[in-house]
Length: 387
Ligand code: NZQ
Ligand code: ZN
Image (cartoon, rainbow, N blue to C red; front, top):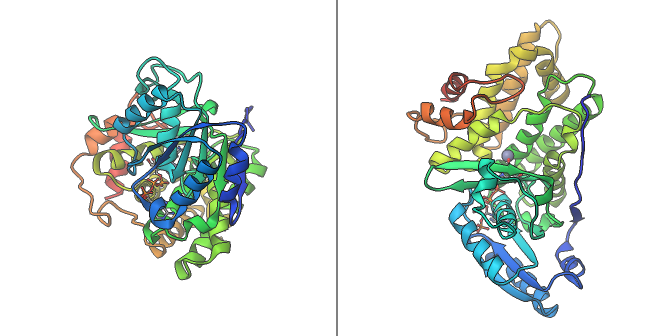
């Protein structure tokens, strides 16, 4: 196990009907609030009115910035930064999925900085301060409700880049599985794929003596897979929705990566699909992860055997290690197909003519990944395997 520091102060308020607790989280602490949300799902579901009702009752000054798009854009972040500075905002309340939360985090750090907020994403500047961010989560997927990350797309690159810092972890996250009932299947299962991918990025490691986090990873993966199948049959199963919602937070708040070297190359490679073609984040990972696995499994075949046996219960009887490892990868592909997530570029109708440029952007500073260090040529081969 490696040395590590872990700090995750986000207060989680979990369970059916938990939105009313927003009252206690705000009372006596925040008056000037920026309500940040997306394209209207929260108005359709009635959540917007519930939240506005609570904020009015508390006599908060409420400013609104809506219109966050999936793969959130820098231009809206700039609008938010301007508004937050002008109105001296005390809390940014993000109501939605990862895109809304990431945009809120960007506004939070941008409003407490004199330069261009994009500096944090390019690594030109380090985050020192933020306006607190509170979350009402409507889509379990990214883990952004408690994570140290924010991912923003600069339209004129296109560049999709992340900033990671403990300072931007949200102050609180309200997580009511009932709020996810309105999700279309496409988003539910893209979310499931994203959650699994956050575990893969940590699970596939060369770090030894990490029994506890290995088993926590395996338990979380099995929980997600089991409950995804339940939701495929019955999207209204609230118990399954609750399991997946909690798994989303656990998968990406850092607990599963304690003491391990994590990878993150698949996320960078997949982000280019979103930057270039607007592909939904979770679906881009369904396309890239199987290709990544096929490309790297020989780097540490025992780890892939462990994945196959402990997560998908692949039998080892009369098989070579390689056969078991490949059966594990194929079991993942079968699972993704079963839940309607694409596992190749062609299934998603994506072009194959930008591999060079996308690989160059993914590699960015010369190399990528830890499980296997990638050059641009490796990344092109992964896109090629994902055709
Ligand atoms: O905009 P609205 O109308 O709200 O609709 C959204 C959006 O169209 C809809 N939606 C959300 N909750 C709903 C709902 N529709 C019906 N009922 C509900 N309850 O779902 C659509 C997608 O929302 P979005 O927020 O884009 O999805 P997701 O949560 O998957 O977020 C994806 C973004 O997060 C980033 C991704 O790269 C991507 O930009 N990530 C952030 C991370 C982090 N901050 O730690 C880590 C992740 O790896 C990821 O990179
Ligand atoms: Zn992700």
